[in-house]
Image 1: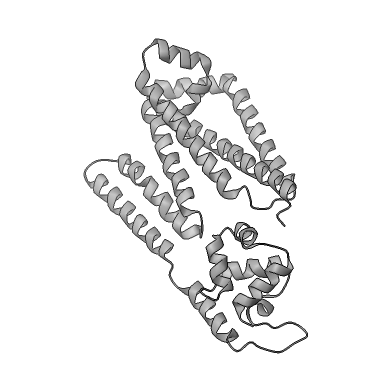
Image 2: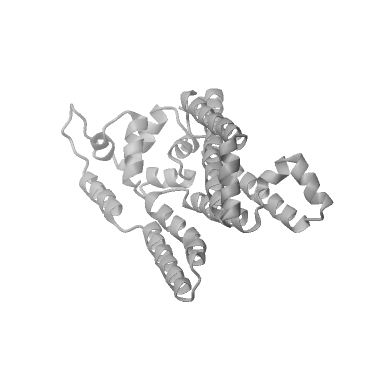
Amino acid sequence: MTLGERIYKMRTEKGLSQGDLSEILEVSRQSVSKWENDGAIPDLDKIIRLSEIFGVSIDELVKGENLFSAEKEPHAEKAAEIIIRKENSFPPRKIIGTVLLSLSVIVTVVLLAAGGGIVGLVLSSPLILCGIICFVFKKNIGLWCGWAVFFCVDIYLRIATGISSAVILNFRTLLFMIRGGDFIRLLLAFGQLAVIASLLAITIFRFWKIPLESKKLPVIFWAVYAFMKIAMAVFSASHLYLKIRNLLLATYEMWIYTLSHSLYVWIYTGFFIAAVVLTVRYFYTRKHKTI
C-alpha cells in the first residue's frame, strides 16, 4: 500500500471527505487528491498534522509500520527521503523574503544618503515586514503581507495627515469634516475603513472553517480587547494624558504621540480581529462538527 492509498484509507475510515480534510489542513482539495493518487507528497508539517488527525504515528502513516508490525512498504524509504529533502530545501517564500529584505536595505541606504532621514525607514518598512513574514510563515503569506502593508500605510497617514478610519465612527468629527469641506481627508478615512473591512472579511473567510471547539480562546481575546479599550478611554480623560499631549505639542514632537497612540490602537485592533475570527470559528465548529 502506498502513502496515497494509506491517506485515502484513513480518511474514509474517519468519515472525512477530501473537502473536509483540505479545510482542516488549510490546503486545496486538489492537493489532497494528488496525495491520494500519489501525484504529490505532502510536506513534513502536513504529514505530522495528518498523523494527528488519523490518530497514528508518522511511521505508520508514511511507512505502514506500527508497534505490532515491522513490515515496511517497498517505497516507504524513498517517500520519507523525498519529504525530508523537501523540508530541508530553500523554499520560494524564503527566496522572496530575501529579495524583499535586500530591497529594503537598498531603499533605506539610498534615501539616507540622499538626506531622506527617517523617510527611508518609513518607505522600506512594508518591505521589511513582508520579508520577515516570508521567513516566519509557511502559509497565508499574501494575507499577512496585506495586513502588514496596510498597517504601514495607516500609521503613515495617521502621522502625516492626522486621519484614520476612526473619524467615520465619530459622528461629531464626521459632521465637522463634512461642514468644513474636508472631503479629501474624509475620502482617505473611508478608504482606510474599506480596506480594513475587506482584510477582515478575507481573514474570516480564510480561517472560519478551521475547527475550534473551546470558547476559552475567543473569550480571552474579547476580554483583552475590552480592557485595552477601557484603559485607553480612562487614560485619555486623565490630567496626565493632557500634560503629555500639551508637552509634545509645545516641543513640536506631536508625531511621537501620534505614533505611540497609533501603535496602541493597532494592538487592541489586532485583539479585536483575532476575537472575531476565533468566535466565527467556534460557532462554525459547533454547528458543523468538522472534526
